[in-house]
Structures are given as C-alpha cells and as structure tokens.
Amino acid sequence: MLTFQIIFQSLFISLLIQLLFFIIAAINKTDKVTDLSYGLTFILITIFSFLGSEQEFAQQLLLAMIAIWGIRLSVYLFIRIMKIKVDLRFNKVRNSFVQFGKFWLLQAISVWIIMLPANVFFGQSSLLNAWSTLGMIIWLTGLTIETVADIQKFQYKNIPKNKNRWTDVGLWKYSRHPNYFGEMLCWWGVFLFCLPTFNNYQLLTIIGPMFITFLLLFVSGVPPLEKRYLSKFGDNQDFQEYLKNTNLLIPLPRFNR
Image (cartoon, rainbow, N blue to C red; front, side, top):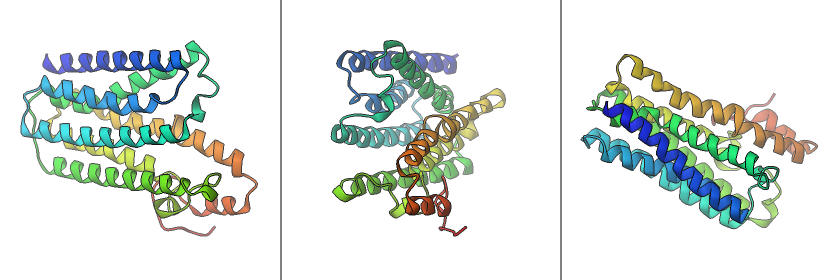
C-alpha cells in the first residue's frame, strides 16, 4: 500500500510543481524557470518519497544520488539560462497558452515516469547487493560524463569566437551529445541500484530509464539539436567532417569514413 501511495503522491507533486512554474513562465513570458523546475521536481519528489519511506541506509543512498544529480543539473541550467536569456526551443510556443501548457504537462508526466523505479524502491524495505554496486558505479560514471560535458561546452561557448560554432572539444570531440549519454547512464544506474528490491511486476519500472533514453534519443534531446545544427552549419565542410567522424551518443575514438 505504501508503494502506491508514494507513486501517486509523486504524480501529484510533479503536476503541482509544473503547474506553479508554468503560471510564472506564462505570465512573465520567461524561460528562466523552465529548466530549473525540471531538476527541482526530481529533488522534491525524492525528498517527499524518502520521508514517507522506512529511511533505511539504501534509501538514504538513493536520496543522495538523485539529489546530487538534480542539484547539479538545476544549478547548471539556471546559470546557463541567466546568461543566454532565451531558450530557442520555446520560440514557437511561448506565446500560446495551450501549446506552452502541453510542454509543462509533458515535463510533469516525464519526471513521474522516470522516477518510478526510485519511488517503488522508497515504498518498501530495500536490499543491496552486487547490482546495487554496479548501479552506483554506472550512476557515478554518468554523472561525471554529464558534468564534464556541460562544463566543457559552457566554457567553450563563453569564448566569443566560438559563439556561433558547434562544440568539438573535450568529450564533444568524441560524441556529438555526451551530456545526454551521461544522463541516460545516471537513470540506468538508478534502476540497477533499485533492482535487488524489485519482485515480479515491479520490474516493469524499467520503463523509467527506457523512457528517458527514448525521450533524449528520439524526441526532445538529440533530434531538435541535430536539426538545428544541420540548418545552421549544414554547408560547412568542417561540420560535415565532424558529423561523419564523430559518434552520435557514446564517446568513442574518432574514425574516418
């Protein structure tokens, strides 16, 4: 019973937070709170779910994992939007109450789905074994990759001559989207950390990491950025070489085709 309470509580919290931030963003026609609300929702859901759990050591570890990921992402995205002022993703929907609202609804549901493994984990007595250790290693690897990639891109774009150029330094030299790869690893790591506790139907919570992987690969992550880069740099020979020689997602040694 506790598991279902936590799951439905997390859905309510996610919808409520997104509604509040949507109202702020819609009234002020601003993008400054959009990404901030994303990471903050994960953090608040995790805190409330933890407080309703048995607060065992394993649950304390999971709380720390998600909170660290959420705080880092929220701070980085807030600093970035304060610098760039406008998020180009919302240029076509910002002034439409309905279309803009759809984005916030999707974000609320997305956070809830991604959090399913963690919320089921918080809803019962937890177990730790080798899968948990592997999950923590994968989570830490993903967090490191995502953090390093974000720092490298931010620093690169802060150099005036690079403002209108694609990022191809550091991890970006070996992957066109290393930050998204890192984020996927974080949530697959969370699922594996929780795995020893799951029984039968609870294994269906694998939909969480599968959903974020699908979202980043085919919906809101890679596709719009690839489209924007092709539109902006498609005629640039150096960019064409970058496309041909650099892996889409996983940082791998460059290859010549």
